[in-house]
Length: 311
Image 1 (cartoon, helix red, strand yellow):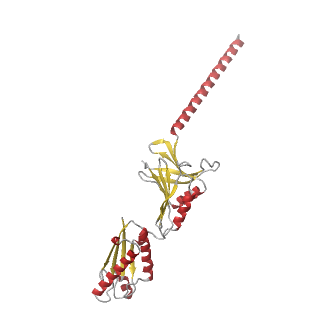
Image 2 (tube, helix red, strand yellow):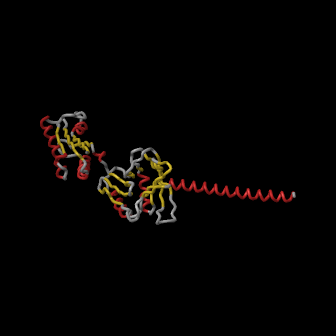
Image 3 (cartoon, one colour):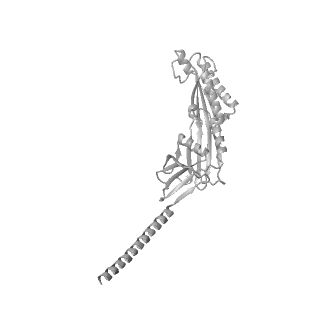
């Protein structure tokens, strides 16, 4: 009787343990499904151009600015830009259709495209996203991204959706049709002027003694201004103000300064600059900036000031 009781209890315990195991399995399966569904609901919204729709173009191609642009469907445009400057510069800008609604960070990675499996990705930088501003990256990162594209890798940006924190956004630059546009862009960058608008927007030119001929340094300077004026259609006004020293009569000095101002104006016009954009005046001995008692001082007073204004 005792033996039968023990065997009955043993069978009952085995059944209960088995049932408990089934319950655990069901609970685990239910939890796994819940996590899977939640992750699926979170997901990643991906933006990129397909191989068939990918386009890279040289949006600006001049000695003042070079821009390599790439359209990202339903998202915006990626732009690499370099401008005329004393130092080679570069900037990357992500022009979004919908600007950030809050501050956050995006991770910039170099990823292997789907058609090129087996190549691991790597982190390139973090990009700051400011509210209602297009994000940008500096020269070093911009050139690195171009180098990755040249090698067949796809720079990709990952960040949290500012309207739904559980969602992530992925934005990729396509390598399709990149190389030809990139070679043209590099050639454009190599042809940029080695000075900018800021370098010449306010320029003081000096003359040789008792002459309307420039010093050698000033001649080089006016050639730079003439070249820039011929390239930039956005310059609204060029002011040419000429002055003389006090050596000689006031009337003759006034006429000399007017002659100098008009000669510069004619020089610009002959080189294709619209005369309506230039105002030239001579002021003679007015507004001296140095003493006329010394040769050095008189040399500083024999000057032309050229100021340029953009639209």
